Every structure is written in C-alpha cells, then in structure tokens.
Amino acid sequence: MKNRNFLHWIIFIALALTWGSSFILMKRGMDTFSSDQVAALRIFTAFLFLSPLAFRHIKKNLFKLIPAFAGMGVFGNLLPAFLFTKAETMISSALTGILNSLTPIFTLLLGLVIFKQKTRWTQVVGLAIGLSGAVGLVSLGRDGVNHGNVFVGSGFVLLATLFYGLSVNIIKAKLSGIPAVTATVFAMCIIGPIAGIYLFSTDFISRLQTHPHAWESLGYVSILAIFGTSLSVIVFNILIKEAGTIFASSVTYLIPVVAMCWGAADGEAITLIHVLFIAVILGGVMLVNKKW
Image 1 (spheres, rainbow, N blue to C red):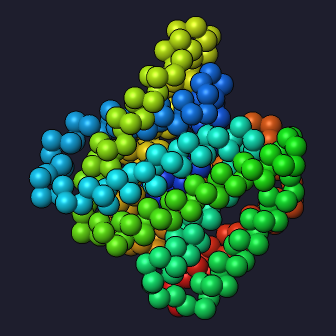
Image 2 (tube, rainbow, N blue to C red; image 1 turned 90 degrees about the vertical axis):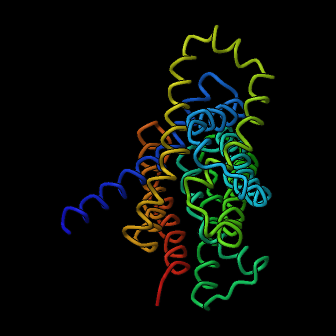
C-alpha cells in the first residue's frame, strides 16, 4: 500500500510539473514560430503521437457520439491552444498559468447555467472569491506591456478556461462511460487534421528551414504536445481511478505555483501582491471543490 501511495504522489507531482511547465514551453516555441503556429503544431503533434491507437479505440458504435467528441476536442484542446499562445504575446507565462487555475470555477458556472447541475452555497461563494482574485491580479498590469493589452491577453485566458469548463461538462454529460484514452484519441482524430491543414498553409516550413532556433523551438512544442496534451491525459485518468477524483483534482493548486516559478526564472516580475491574489484565487477554487 505504501508503494502504491508513493506512486500516486509521483504521478501527482509529475502532472503538476508537466502542466505547470506548459506555459513556458509555449513561450519558448514562440521564439521561432507565431502563436498560431505553436498552437496548431501542438495539436497536430499530439494527433500524430496518438494516431497509432486509433485502430484500437475508434469503433463504429461510437460514431453516434461524434458531436460530443468534437465538442471535447474543439473546446478542450483546439480553441484553448490558440487562445493561450495568443495570450502569451500580451501577458507573461506566469500570469497565464495562474489564471488557468480558474478552470474549476468556470466548470461549475457552466454546469449551473447550461447543464442545470445542483450546487452548494459554498461553491457560489468560492466562485465569487476566485473571480475577484482574478480581477485583482489582472488589474495589476505588471507584465511589461500596456495596460490595455494585459486585459485583452487575460481575456483570452479566461475564454480558454471557459472553454475548458464547457469541455468538462460535455464529457460529464455525454462521455462519462467512455474511457479517457478512447475519448482523447477520438477527439484528436477530429481536430488533429484540421490543425495540420492550417499549420502547413502558413510559412511554418520556411521558418523551420531558416530560423536559427527552429529545431530547438520544435523540440519544446513537441514536449508540450506529447507530455502536456497526450500522455498527461492518460496518466491523469489512471490517477483518478486509483487515488480518487479529490486527490487527482488537487493538482489544480500546484499548476500556477509551477508556472509562477518558471516565469520568475525567466525574468518575469513576481511580487508579493501577485502571490496574495494567487492565494485568493486558489482559496476560491478550494471552496468550489470542497467536499463537506
């Protein structure tokens, strides 16, 4: 049992480091490629990595669920990938990672409004606290760019977390009986070719051939795609099954910490007031997820 618990903690820490590092990996990818190219490359590479599993996981009896798989892929992967990279042209990778922690709050909000899920008053309070922390954090405007761009960039991240919340609710409502690997493979087979077609319609090949840091950036995005988009979903599903949803979902609290540490290491400004607003956001997320 002790060895099992130790393995759970190893997976937990690995997920936090992987997802928390994804924002700095996007930034390094954009040393060579445009924000849209990084997003498309991330999705297309994840698709290529998972495509060998398609023969085993894509079955005819699942074709009736194509709209749900498409919703999962578009709202859970495709659109957020483009929104996050676009945001990082305006705000720091640390702030992007911190605002990403609002995903559970938008998951609750959309579950209430669209899917008519029941809720507790503590979750409503947590939602309000989390959003107030995000507003305070964004209002600081400490990212080395003009104040207007901070709000626009942060708006892109908030829209991405809103889409994440929609994807989670689609999975809960329509795909709860489908294994995570099957759902991920099916979703990637829908959105991957779209991302690939867009990617090769740009000057991606030209940049790859001429930019001095092209292969280095390609390596960073490939790591992001394989570990942050493909394998992490499979490993996260294993953690949910073996350690429970409460333990697994707690990784949400470490992701912004890892993102903030990478941002600080990359020279991005992190002050005490940033940390205080992060605590407010995470406090709200804890109330939303709290099992009384």
